[in-house]
Length: 409
Image (cartoon, rainbow, N blue to C red):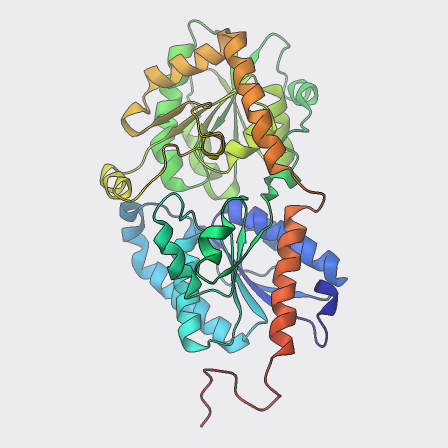
């Protein structure tokens, strides 16, 4: 257990590659610090949230916020350089554990190189890869690399355990946020939004490619809605990595539009809104916790999609629909991600109280699943990682002797 970690202060090398991972990492850091009485050291790669918790990032996390094959290709040389830099730093420091937080495109490549160079360094991956959505046999790939896996969904561990990889269900840390506890009236008051105004939360994603592809469609959607809903106010929560890009894109939107940053503003906006238009991603779970009726949209490079469709085994992209195994939250993807269809779905949720209530009731079930257990997910994750550290230290070779895989002259 965490209390058994003895000796000098353990060092955890954390690697996050995008804002959702940065949030996971920050909560993990706070939980580990609480479990150890502050006797833990963090190094690695993270964003503004992990930095606020005391991490000095090896390089800016924004360099890793990429998605899709054709979106990645122009950045590949720099990505390879950053992988090699990260591996070299890990081998130099030899931390008590390396924890990759989601972003498998980067973290798995780092882990493979570390495993090959020094098999004695414990490797943990936080957020089990969705092998159930792709190919279950891919679980064997992770079993060959990692010592432990942390799953955020309850049905995931068996896929990996049957391959001999220890996997702990820790729960989804989205329940630790304030998504369902926002102050809607306070948000309206401080932003001068009238009681009769109808607020739509617009969430175009946290990656540059996402916002570039989706914001033009979102603008056109609001243009179509304005004649029948002249009292619409759009609120666009964003993050630092894409703030300037989003601000420029929404400057000429056809309805009053507010740009906000930070969790408090985002969750208060959820509470003030009647509907949301959002890119597919973790935010869908936050919207479920906020009981905010939502339309999900997404668009990728068509060739990337053609390749993914050969591998994907699931019917939905939204975790809410996946967990319910039915289309509760509308998903308008690729060729269906069109302003006329997006506007029609939003208008239905704005104008039909029964449609709104049906979605609210459905996401409440998902919210209950996500919130199971008395121990916060980040604390469960921290306990599991510290247990890996404790086990590693108990079998560590005596000082002066090489670890397994270490070469001495």
